Image (cartoon, rainbow, N blue to C red; front, side, top):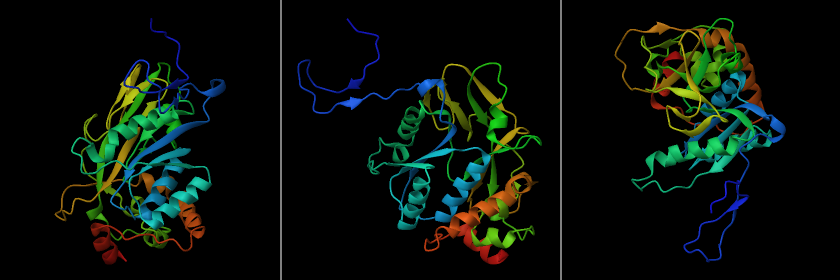
Length: 305
């Protein structure tokens, strides 16, 4: 008769009486002493193709820390030496957990370096310690747009009904639209290639929920994570774009003109702090290469500089 008691260890064997070769401990998915150690943990899907843009990684971590991220679970398939040194720096400061993820790239059954599998691992790895997990790529940021909202905590506060997730609409900030935009600290932003401060225009439309969306998932309610959605118990909260919006900075390699929306929310709310924090971080890493910028940044950076 099957017992409903939660096991302490598990193993996989081919026969009923076979001695297991490996025994795995079952980690608790409930917070110790009834409280979480952090509120927001960000999951970053596998770095790959010897990823080397350390300037992008530092900007991503530092801006997300300002917004509310307290811990990062970063999956690594392959990365360059300069990125490894960035990861080691943040790991030493207790901010990053690095998960080595050497899945086969050539297997057609493994979608994009096992991205969906990594999401499940990130959810269950953090269930006992983090109230929310946040799914973001390196070119994505959930930015509060309501005037009196500054951090992610403001978005999730005062919920009378248990929320399964908070879903955010996506809008694209095309990197081709980088212009000669004057603001205090511009030279520092150029030096460290801070695209979130140098680019202030996005497309005129937001994608519908479920298309390009990203989310905060409540770990106690979530059973599984998809790239743009969360499965579990509770009610998903579809966050209006005037409350918060997913800023997505993407290369389209398309330099034709098209309608744009000027949006200075990020630089006005977070610009000064981001400039200071990024500059201070790179002072601690004097011999680490920033890495080579992508094609559109190279083109617009040389023109703007």
